[in-house]
Image (tube, rainbow, N blue to C red; front, side, top):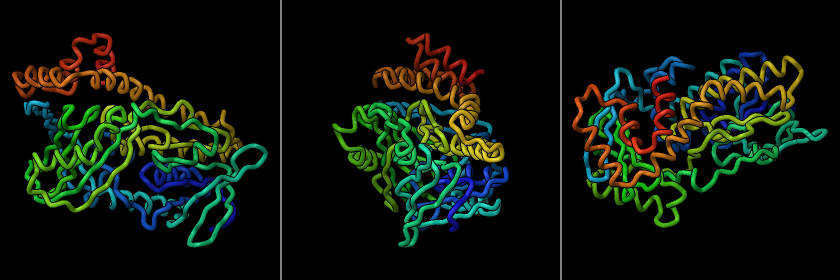
Length: 390
């Protein structure tokens, strides 16, 4: 590593690698730092992504795809099942391979990538961020840059160090735990979602197939409820009741901010992207597609700011504006819809499933699901229309 770059990106997940790549493509000299020994581990993700979201930034590669998904099955608390079919829904990925390739694509664009690089502080000059302090293979280094991009996940420290308010309320933080398991008997092209206070209060459980009888099985519990019973206890119960023959290959746990984007995602010489900026979908908690979209915008704006010789908060705010237009405004609506859904009782969820189950399959759409569930909250129906109809 040299002592100076135009841009330093902290975190080599999808958001960080994408931001680094597009900054380099824009002419910036970029350093990408990853604290783990290898890009792509640990995989703390259900690994699902929609085809449209992926293609908005990248063309899918076969080596990334564990399963193609064309339907979703929603399971109410009383066991009633409702199936949604899609002409082209998306994929369950091999995230380790996917993340590795994103970092390699960044390197091919000219990014210098370093793993086992633990960033433990920021450098300051004249009251603004001017680089990072990093421990790399036992050597403590001070590396300067005009812009530092924090892509260090929900536990991001870059934003906090820079003075940005990155706090997530307990209400909006989903405590998640997941296993990858074999001997799971599900349809290979269907993702399953389970709801109810006994399954995952304030959230849901999921089963995402990965082929050959392997699946990601996990759940997220709202912080409002996580103190009453540990998420891992909910998952053990879920596995015992529904997949008693499953053989557990991996365990992972983490938090997902199911909240609107942070009010401020830039400062002088600093940008936040991905989970660090709370850019995951507030309803589903899914964040791969939005990480790619935000990373592309973030990297491009960073390179433009470097060329302009202006890395002030005012100049970097162009990224926040473009993000809000692309996804942020929709996420605010998703959040309001999420709040309405989380107020539903198990009886409400069962009633919704019973009504939908009586419809012809072709009439069961995601819009119809939310309209049926939220019929008692007419103000939210407009939000549903804006999000899913346009």
